[in-house]
Every structure is written in structure tokens, then in C-alpha cells.
Length: 131
Image (cartoon, rainbow, N blue to C red; front, top):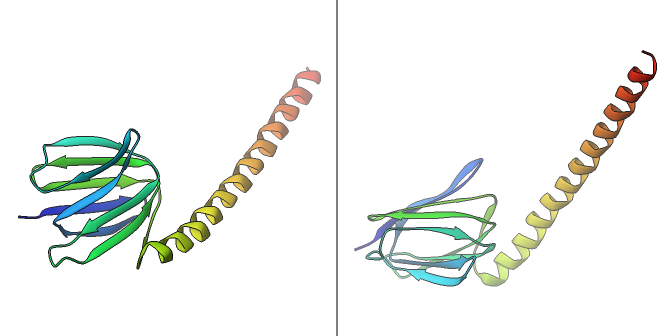
């Protein structure tokens, strides 16, 4: 008996397939799940999501915060960001590169938004002065 696992980010379906077991980290700590696990919804913390496939092979994903919902034999996982690695060492390098790169883009975007907001406030101030 297996469960069908779907791992999604806002922009992509990263994985859809059968798994004999999975493990990850929730806000309260690490957990494991087998196909006969009770139905549950779990808030995920940034961590490694490990899937053991029916043939015994393992797939590892670096995930950001998200939500896991298990209903029957279906497991749906939605996270902000995720990447797959060949193994834990490889995954660590990929997560560092991609997540840090995204964080830098987010900081740049936040700085640009702050400048835009400040310009708008100054513009409203000047508009108010001319009245």
C-alpha cells in the first residue's frame, strides 16, 4: 500500500507520485508518515522533505514553509519554495544557492517598494502644499 504525494509551489508541480513513507518537519518538530496514517493537516516548517518510494529509493526536497494535507491515500503539499536534490549534501548546496538568491531578490524588491512608497508620500505632501 502506498500514498500518492503531490508537492507544489505557487508556480509549479515539483513531484506527483507514489510514496511508501515521507518525513519532514512541522512547527512542533519532525514527523514521519506512512500510508495508513490518520487524515491530518500539518503546517510545515522550512526543512528537508524525504520521500521513500515503493522501490526503496529516496527523494529529498528542500522546502520552505507550507501546508501538508493527508486525506485517505492522497497527500497534498503546498510550499512557498522547494528544490529537489540527489542527496542531502547536494540538496544543501542547491538550497543555499537558490533560496539565498531568492532572498536577495526579495530584499531588492522590498527596497524598491519602500522607495516607491516614500516617493508617493512626498508627492502627496507636495500636492497638499499646493492646495
